[in-house]
Length: 380
Ligand code: ZN
Ligand code: ZN
Ligand code: ZN
Image 1 (cartoon, protein in one colour):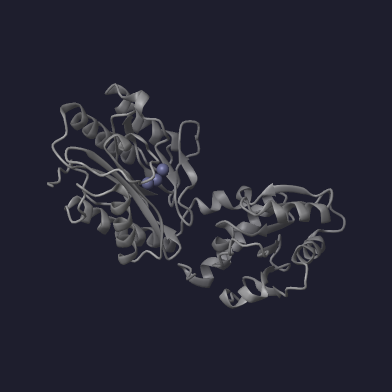
Image 2 (cartoon, protein in one colour):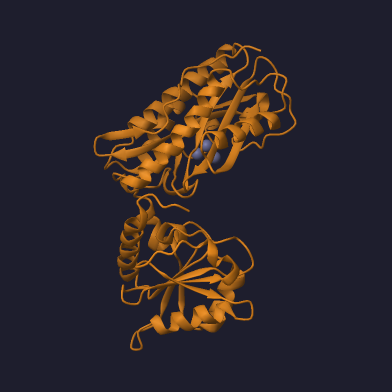
């Protein structure tokens, strides 16, 4: 994986991660599956039965060692000054190798050793490590990395902007009627959106939700066999990964003039989405973004139909910190990147959602998606 910002970015991240380890009293960090590993190393572990694990000491002198299956070592882009690579052969026991190194990184005179391990590491390995390192205290690596990853540097914001621009081009094709809808099963439309995401530069498609008619009322509907008819709302929510960073956008289009209440719902959601973006000011609590969007929907009388939080952070992962949800009083800081995606879902009937990604900046909220929000009625 090519890392936006290159080796200098990785060194700076590892330095900040070590400071956070020390603040959290962690002697060792063990990174395997999940996004913390690529965030500090540029390397993404394969989700297979062989162990990949970066063992990080709390000081720069202690360094970091990437244990990787010998047959996967050619995938690793070496990052001198960031980590060294220790390929392990099929006859070796990688868990024991990791445990031995970890034990050496713990100061002899210290108290209970504390280790942060990837949130998404297999329990196969975690339980084996716990048997080899009895009495150690374990925590998740998100305790160390999540607050750091929530603040994107310039290169990361650029990468998110590139991914969003690619998703916008697909959204424009949808809004412009280039993707035909009526008479096609949702599944086909989903496949076309996925193909277009790749054509526009994504390396991976993460999801392409297409919910038509009553299915539009199911926020995480999986595109299926239902054939799209004339006179319906179609919620399309899609995203992929481009150079490691994720896109995520939702537009709702209509295959015929919507009835009055549905038209009204669309206008309310659009207004709520604008209010949410507008509230995304540096210094104001994350929950204020949720409240601002929800207020619009509540006062229009549709509050009980807005059944999810207003947004999620995004970066190397589709969903990560910070979350725009009631109860998250953490203030927004420059570099926070997240979605603003209110929706109204009337069960069994219809639903509308509009979603853009936004970055909090000192100059105010910067939307990364700029595809049109106006109500679009597409012909047959
Ligand atoms: Zn979602
Ligand atoms: Zn989405
Ligand atoms: Zn989203």
